[in-house]
Amino acid sequence: MSQPSEVILEGERVTKYFGGSAALKDVSFQVTRGEILGLIGPNGAGKTTLLNVVNGVLPPSGGTVRLRGRTITGLRPHAVARLGVARVSQSPRPFTSMTVLENVAVGALFGGQDRGSKASTALEQAESTLRFMGLHDKRHLPVRSLTLQEKKMIELARALATRPEVTLIDEVMSGLNPAEIEESMRLIRRVRDELKVTIVWVEHVMRAIMGTAERVMVLNYGQVIAMGTPDEVARDQAVIDAYLGRG
View 1 (cartoon, one colour):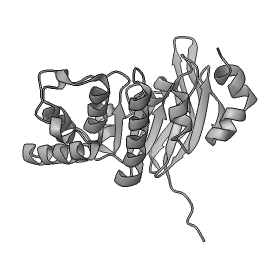
View 2: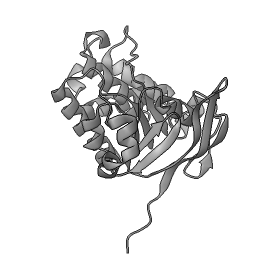
View 3: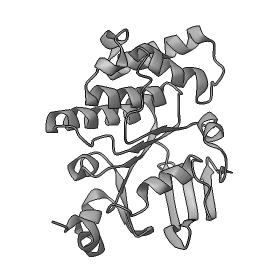
View 4: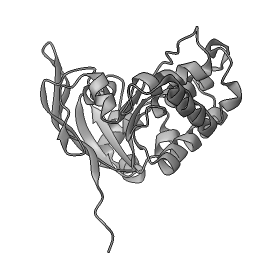
């Protein structure tokens, strides 16, 4: 008999107000260990706000976030990172004066569960991560010389160098061409399959989400309007009306 799936990350009635407007309203979800959960919805639906609440960038106005059953609501980002949650932002933010290797080593040195590692250990972790990403041959290049896709992958590498259990990814496909999107989809699958990292992924490129995620959660006006497999979500009339049917 199969073992029950372990819930690694969950939110219970997560709410966030900005002034009198609810960016999130009673958002509840569960993410199982080893899952790729896609998070989609129109602009302004609350997707990035939800990631910001989960990793401590924003305090919630109400509700609870738990990691492995432990309440992490209201913890600062560095504390959440030390517990095993990494974040990849929508826009690459590399240290342009550093090399590729140095950029990734920053994650290993100052983020994640091994915060405070020696510089030599951080460099070893960065080297290993770059080999996994297929970017090891660029490790001594200045990061400013990279393509947009490579800069986005360096952001992911820096997150992975923290040795996370969960990685929150925000629109990593934006600005990429079809071939780069396919390559990035394969890489995200490898992150889950080979590194055993659970992924929560906000994305507007629908074929990427629908072709990669096991489940998809849909937000609209800060509320969950659907949760299910990509096929189930694609057939949901509320999702079609709010998002997929636009344009």
